[in-house]
Image (cartoon, rainbow, N blue to C red; front, side, top):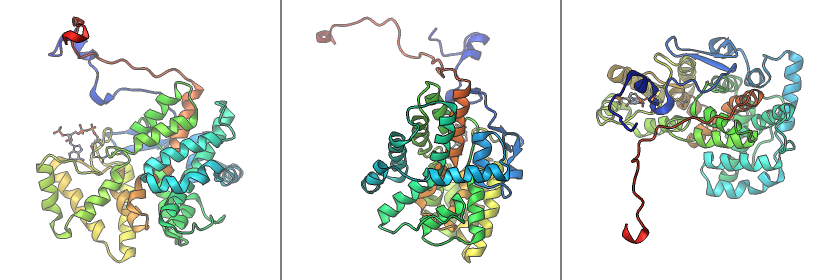
Length: 384
Ligand code: ACO
C-alpha cells in the first residue's frame, strides 16, 4: 500500500480515476449520451427530434412520469403545474430580504430549502408524493427566479398569463413584456435542451443525497449548490462576461493570449462529448436567428470567432453553455440569471432522478484511496 508510482496491473486498474471520469455511478432510463457521435437521448428520444417539436412541459412529463403525454395527460399535468406555482407564506415573506443579501443561485438554494418546509408532502417519500413534489418544484423554480428579480429591482411582477407556457411566462415576468411568439418558442427549446444530462455533477449530487433516503427538496438543494459553480452551470454567465470584456476587433488574439497563459475559456470542453455537443448545434442556430432579428449581431459574430480560435488552438468544441449565453442575452435575460435559467430547466431532470433513485435505492457510498502518512507515532500535546 501507499506506493503511487505504478504497481501491479491490478493495482493500476484499481487506482481511482480523478474526477470519476468513465466511472458508471448509476443506472438510469432517463437520458443517454453518445459522446463520440455527439448524440443525446431523453428516455430513448433523440434530442434532435424533441428540440423545437416538444414543449418543456411535455419534456418534464416525459422525464418525471415516463412518457410523452397525450393531450389529456398534458392538460392534467399542465393544470398541476399551474396549481403548483403558488408559493408558501414563508417564502413570500423572506424573498425581499434574501434578494437583498444573496446572489441569484444562493437565493435559489435558500428559497427551495424554505419551500421544502411548506410543501404539503414534506414528510413523505412515497412515490405519489414525490411525483407531486416534482411537479411543484418544476412549477415554482421559474416563479422563484422571477420573484427574486422583481424584489431586487423593485419592479412590479406581471401576473402569469394562462395562455403562455412556462417559457413564455418566464420571459414575461423577467422582461416585463409579453414575449413575441418566436422568442417564447426559442426559450422553450432552450429549456428542453437543458432538462437532463446523465450523471452531470449536480444530478450526481442530487442522487447521492436521495440515496440516503433523504427528501426531494434536500436533494435538489444539493443540486442547486453544485450547479452554481463555474465549471458546471455557472459557465453560461461567465461566457457572457467574457464576450462583454473582449474588444470585438481583437477577439482572436485575446483568446489566443488567454489560452497561451493557460486560462480556460468558459463554454468550451466537455467531460463526455468528444465532438460537437448536440445541444450546441441548436443553440448556435437560435443565437444566429436572434442576433439577426435584434439588428446587432456583434456578440454572435464574436462567439463564432471564439469558436474557430478555440478549435484551431485546442481542438475543443463549444458546450451547451457557450451559445446559451448569447441566446439568453438576445432574449433580454439579465446575465446573472443565466445559471438560474439552467436550474429552471434542470429541475425537471433532478426531480426525475430522485424519483428513479428512490424506486430502486441503494446507498451511494464510494471508496477513497488513502494517500496520507501511515503508522505515525502519537505525541502528547506539550511535546508537539
Ligand atoms: N479552455 C481551455 N482549455 C480547456 C478547456 C477550456 N474550456 N476545457 C478543457 N481544457 C483543456 C484542459 O486544460 C486540459 O488540458 P491539459 O490536458 O493540457 O491539462 C484538457 O483540455 C482536458 O480538460 P479537463 O479540465 O481535464 O477536462 P475535464 O473533463 O476534467 O473538465 C470541463 C471538463 C470542466 C467542462 C472543462 O472542459 C472546463 O473547465 N470547461 C470550461 C467550463 C465550462 O464551460 N463548463 C461547462 C461544462 S458543460 C455544463 O456543465 C453544462
